[in-house]
Image (cartoon, rainbow, N blue to C red):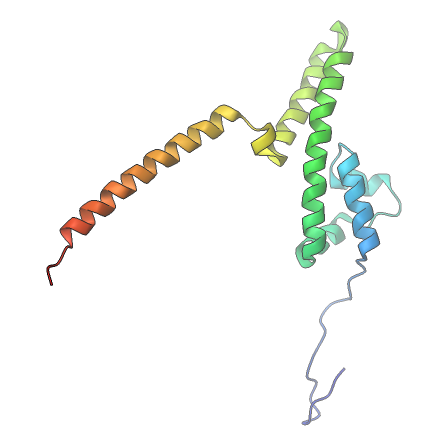
Length: 153
């Protein structure tokens, strides 16, 4: 602990130090990007994985890790979308209901992870049209307000 001139502690470190390393972060991101399961299952699958809470804390505290993790989740969305094709191609009449659920689950998750790429295009177009309509209404209201508050100097 550092001391200042008045012999009082100048900096107190609170909590335990982080055990994050770039190597651990890269390994976690590599596993997230190459598996179709979530973080709890990944942590349970590998003995060398930190706890889910530790990973969440690292995401909060470390910008570099947060960005790499977000990129890994985008890659995971691509993996999920590719799996949809594989599941559909390998489906049999006996398993069609189970396979449909597997495909739908992956499609839904991919659409949440990468909405612009895998989201519902119709919904995106609807939102764009709504935004344009709102912009037009705001411009109309602004011009009315400008006219109402116009002063001659």
